[in-house]
Amino acid sequence: MTMTTWQAVVTIAAVSLGTMLTRFLPFTLFPDSRRPPRTVTYLGKVLPHAMTGLLVVYALKDVSPLSGFHGAPEAIAVLVIVLLHRWHHSMLVSVAGGTIVYMMLVQLVFV
Amino acid sequence: MALLRTALRAALPPTLPIAASFLFFGGSYGLLMHAKGFPIVYPLAMGYVIFAGSMEFVTVNLLLSAFDPWAAFLLAIMVNARHLFYGLSMLDKFRGLGWRKPYLIFTMIDETFAIDSSVHIPASVDRGWFMMFISVLCRSYWFGGIAVGWLAGGVLPFDTKGIEFVLAALFLSILLEQWDDDQNRKEGDVSAPRPHPVVANLVDSARPHAPALVGLSASAICLALFGPDRFMIPTMALMLAAFLILRTRLENADDTNGARKGKEQ
Image (cartoon, rainbow over all chains, first blue to last red; front, side, top):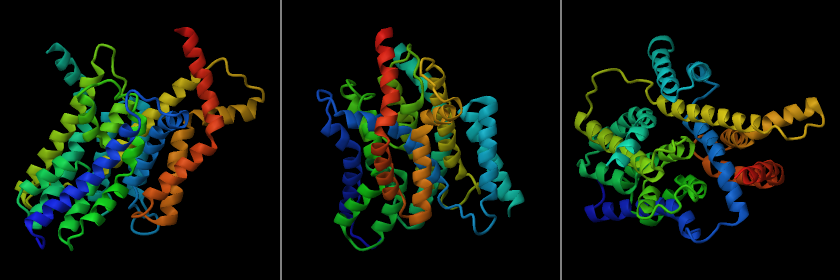
């Protein structure tokens, strides 16, 4: 540790404040009593599914198709998850199956 | 009590993949803090007041560099800017929940948002308590992971290489589930006129998935342009622009649905 305890506490508080601002701001601007404008309601309807798309890409962002195994273990695991989803329609089965397949691939096949 | 018990019973299963993920990521975070010489109270306190996984990892670096709280504040806003969108999407779901609302906002993360916004809560289950338990469970997994990781201090009983893929698997499964939801909504839409069979079919089948497709393609484009460390903010800007441009097309479909629902009631 290079900071004093007090400096560390202030740094953590600053990070916490910044994070909380992103969480509370929408609810402060549009409290229960105030209907948000139509544009905001529309965005609230279309954004969730789009954000899931962003999170999928975010979780796979460090996969490099140009080096190493060219993202082969990730591609196979993604395919397995899609097939498991088609077959069983259970999130637990898809997540567990896909992760186990991926772990086996990177530990046993693509080493 | 019965109210709480049914809510907890409904909330537990969808959080199980998150338990696995948080034990791993919280564990790595605890391990890292241990290796950098921080007492266990640091990762636990940071987990409590920040509760945003990627930002907690970034804060480890901040604590080890020069003292600059303003930069830390700004960085936290940028890394967590996606919460703004989550908040906009949850305005209605958190409405009228009283004292539970600030707690749900305080504990809102990718995972709680993903569950709260996608899981169909049965009518017999109290919505407010369901979401409260999702938050409480996710926080417990995170604290548990941190404690286990810090205490393990470098010794792991089995090879966990590759377990970080659980995060991608979780988000992809949510995407697939939402994709099916879109499809069902569209198939229920029988009165829509279809003038040009071939073209209309193609457009019609893509339209219900437009939000997911915009999210995926905007992220992929920005990832290619800006690289893995700087693509989040441009992606969100591009998504906003795309949705505002597509607004008339996407909202019209929505309005006809809304009008029909209104008649049924």
